[in-house]
Image 1 (cartoon, rainbow, N blue to C red):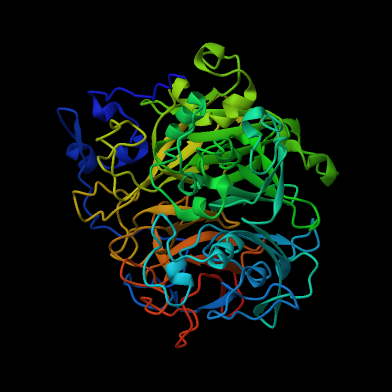
Image 2 (cartoon, rainbow, N blue to C red; image 1 turned 45 degrees about the vertical axis):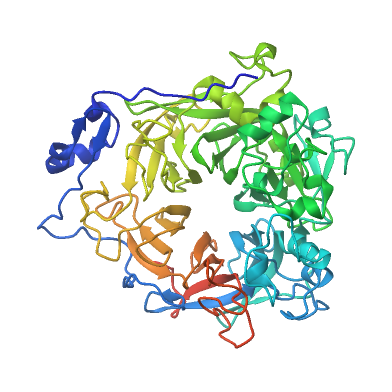
Length: 639
């Protein structure tokens, strides 16, 4: 298959691009600073106004940026470490014993490197904010941070790694469902809950549904010859929740686990498009399904959105192939005005795309069972951002346009398996690492988080929606679906977009940052936005990943009114960590987030981390954990 990558021309008239018409009109100084020099875009940030800083609805006292071994949260708030790597999930689970780990124990304990966090109330259908089910992704493992006696990452041949250590890694990845309850202001795990379970990488069996189910390209030589089920889920990064009360877990960097060149030219091209074989990994030394030369179709069974029903613990998780295969980051839903459900998802790699899925069926609020397979049929599309502020959703449908046999697509199964290549043919816009995509519950506007892209202006030209060269700080776009009969139509073929935030330091002209009026404090500006969440008032809470100026943290801002895009630093992580999976209870009195890979770094390992958070005990390694943050007076977080 010849797969042309989208290559939008750089416009000569940069001002005509849709950087943000509202901001440009309000800020003549910024407009004057836009210069066109050949094909390069130089952006200078606007100076801070001498006037009064707009009033934010967020009243918490902002903390100071910095970096140390502890977690810091705004004054008046308390951060409780709720779930740590290795914590028991059942009444008979063994306690965490870092010096004597084994895979069977790990499958009954909380997993490693938690990422996405979601909260669903108990009982189902209620808005109970003191009792519910927590869904948590466990994205990946790093053996030298997990196992005693190890000081370096294992070599690609796995020399010195035992089979038991490998099995522990597989057991520590995947997903956890945990029942939690708030008593006397403190959250606790309900250890005798029938809902608690792990879905891991090594032994859990998941169902395959949608257009790729049973297709020959989904049939594995080493596991499942029918292409209807698969062992495990891994690289689970961000996620989402459905209106019918299930978790959606996004498989992201699956390509890192496979190595070996297929003898099938089609699968070899498919592997190349997903960068399989870019880096060797020792997993294939222990399990042949990770050898892409021996079983080239196994990799096709990963890179999907996984649906997990926490209220039915005996029901297997399901890979929903209609939503496409790529490095999924998030899968967030909104019920459209006509009852169809829309799912937004990004492909988290430099120069990849933003996707949308619209169900064929309609949500039935009276029958949960009627909704459980809604994600199997519908239309997948990819976004093209135009310089005039327009956005077109391009359908990824077999038989339409170039998605035909002449270009290597013989069915919708081929289209979803090779969603990236299908998007290439349609000329979608190549983005700066699309991470989370969330819908504001108050306004219905969609926020697309783009973390950064060091190759912008190198491998891909600048464009209106991605306007900064090498973009080390990232930005956030705001999508406006058209209004029909008083409601946003998220299934519309066309929308328009605007720039919400260009991250970075507004006092450094080289950053080209913009926060509405650039009136953020010295601690309030951010870099590398990653996961986001909305509270019930439509305020945006932004977790960062990869900031160089300070520890990663959580920033919050209004999306409307005088405090729009005026970010404030609410919490910051321990040294070495990123913050993931921000979410709220329905009443906004608890804010959950994950602290992933604390204490890591090139020179750090199990015995010598950069922090021993959260236990701070000699001999106890640093432990990725989920944190519950509450106001000490029990009020709404942020107010």
